[in-house]
Length: 98
Image (cartoon, rainbow, N blue to C red):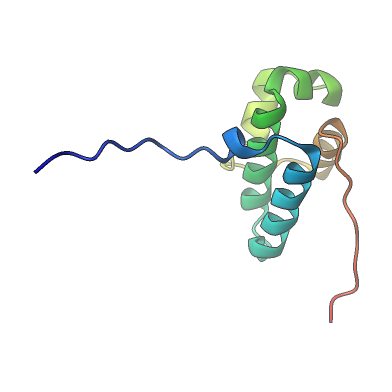
């Protein structure tokens, strides 16, 4: 029997345009069900796709602190989230839930 070679899937490799990044974040926000770590990880995926160094610079954060904040292992402050969203060129929107 032959072995099947697999590679780890990395969503960041598939987020190429601002529209794809926004759609990914929107989908993650819908699926998160209040899980802030899930959202932080999704923002980390988008930041890696865009380039962590540039996102950190644009957000006014060190690259190391950006990696930690968006690792999905701890909840970043809302201030950090807002800085990262802005640095990614994205906007958050509110909508009435029904």
